[in-house]
Image (cartoon, rainbow, N blue to C red; front, side, top):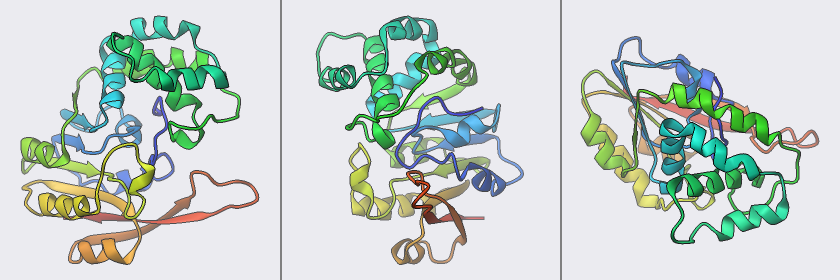
Length: 249
């Protein structure tokens, strides 16, 4: 199945190549930087235990509302429609106190759906079938039924769920592209992530932009170069984007 949202750095166009790199045997699957969850949603189930994590509290609130209260969220979204004015109203209401989790999730869902390139800031001028995507939330809820949803720092998450039988999939903000993501991620966090992954008992698979700094940082690991179409490509500018898939096995 497909994800119910898009997100900066989403892996819709690369998910098949990433899943092809998965090891044959593991009984717990952990997405460390969840985002849109394209890898998670590609299969009915990756392992006996699945964990989805992201540090964005609004995003995780949305996931939890979809998982536990899909009908209530759909009811809240009945008034939603494609409108520039309403889009900016959603953004301005993000810090309003007193809203329920369902109300916050509905507004954040609309901001994601209506923004250009999922930047959460600018209105995307394109048609949207909002009713179809709202109906789809029931299917997403079923998929998330047994998934553990976390909202913690990647270092803490990796320590908590590490086992010899674990597979961590990491899709961090890309090197020198941190500013495009809605959450704080500093250059030193790339080093901290490498240090965390270097100490695990389990296996990891990591996706990054292909650049000398990342290749140097993960020298000695299994690095595979891949290429995909740019997410914001146009007919007049068919750009290709180079990435790497890094593994410790």
